[in-house]
Length: 299
Image (cartoon, rainbow, N blue to C red; front, side, top):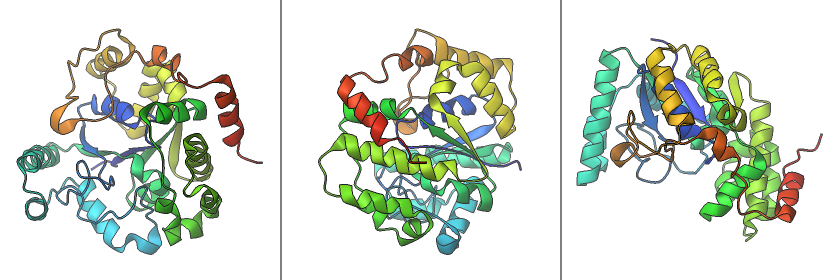
């Protein structure tokens, strides 16, 4: 079987959009956020038979004892039905079990590959490339647009989730710079700091494809054609038509994909190029300048 695929990047960097466009090939089984510590979509042992303790869980060779066999099952599309039944038995959970379990079984029989769409894997991207043999696409959004998106949603980040992971601090000591913002109510400074540290880590991570979300959104067809080649996917007229419909049209029609219910993600069909023009909405010129300053990585 060919290599599994991981699409990652900080939340609100286009991972769901990119994952759905790759899934338009018909050659993949889409797996949504197995490392998300929130249930749903995470904490589903049928999909990933390992306990997630932190957002942005850091996985490396030093702690991969439980993670490696668990993710080998996931990328091999081996669904653990009994483990899922023991943990999650609500009607919604049982419906997800049937959907995911069926997709894994049918996908394995059809020779499809796993596509993991998981922003919470962003700090572990190198491990997925080297130990699981994943083709890793790490998306990076313009920092001003990234912070603006988090501001509009009212999101923040709690840096103890990173600082309480000793192996992450050991391998990436720049994480220690985040300690000064623990407990801060300055959401702009915190989101900018998260972007800056993640950018620094990804820039030196070998074996991954670092992709500008903004460049991909500005010209999606050639961008996705290149990513199809990188992932070893077949670029077909049907895939091109579906991507064109989902990325360049003015309609919000949901034809061609499942956007809601059990497969709900953050993505919805859009004119990706037009969306760039409103990406910084809600920020003042002073805030934009501040974000640009805060996200400039010292040389």
